[in-house]
Length: 431
Image 1 (cartoon, rainbow, N blue to C red):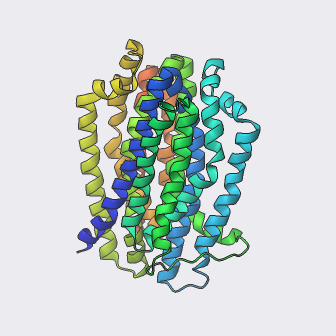
Image 2: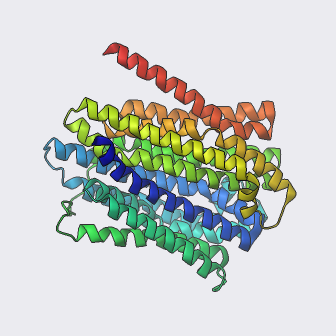
Image 3: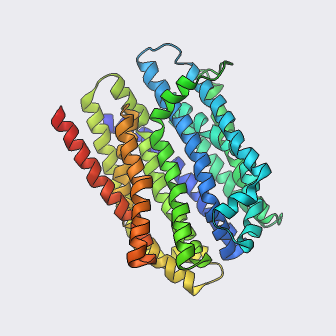
């Protein structure tokens, strides 16, 4: 019964995250058609900025929704304030990005490693995207609270609607309306507004138990929430940190063409990571319920079944990538660059070896966060998302050049998995 109920939460969340992946892939595909390798390079240099926005939005939104659910089960006071607090803090933090888009978008791109040709291509994109930062961040709060309020189907519909809008209007803005990179950014920026509009179906329904209250934002509630949103934060920020580290290393080894190859690899990899994040986030309401009711058997079954689903999907994706690597890379290689194709085909195959390991790590971190074990979640998330992958990227690139960069991801996931299993064994022995 637990497994069947769990799948009702996991499947909508996985589909929602796949929808997000599809619009990212569509974004990359249309940009490659409109602006070639320079467009993909510009997009990839912008990904760390996206990562930072998504990381902060995820930490505030998912963390607040998780804390809200746990406090509600324990009948704590002021539980209803978590939603309002998340909305207000998301708006406050997002203003940093809006101001950066107004004042210094060119400086940000240069810091990411853009030369003059990439700067000309990427400036309209990053400027427009930063203007929509409040909606990107608020969307995490809306979808997370809807999911935790017993409406995972509406949360899924919101995300999928957002993704479909992005894909359709990517094409409309970039080609028939000839808006180029600005059009791509505009479609991406409007998409979270579509998602939030769909979430309003639940907020306006009789089943809704979430209320918005006009109160001064609480720093204490923010800290309590963020401690449980750390898995989401690290999951998103790791993409930003990894992109930055890889971009600088690749620029040094092979220049812009290597970054373009990594852009194709990273966007395909995002599909897998998004699915694993979907499982990690999807198990959260049930795992939090089990934690609140002290049902240890349910917690074990939720964790085990989630891991089984993650491993099955990750192995399937890895096999698909190894078989169809040339065709996948060809989708993003509109200029038919032989050099980019060779780099990306080898890279995507080596990179995908880390998928099963990443699935286990991400799902475990999500489970730890959902059951209130913020410290252990933080250690696993930081190891796989920042510390280990940066270490291996630099060390392996020195030893094996560009092949070492591609192998950094599986190496980091393997080290984190070994470390997390050792940590779990020690914890069990103490008990």
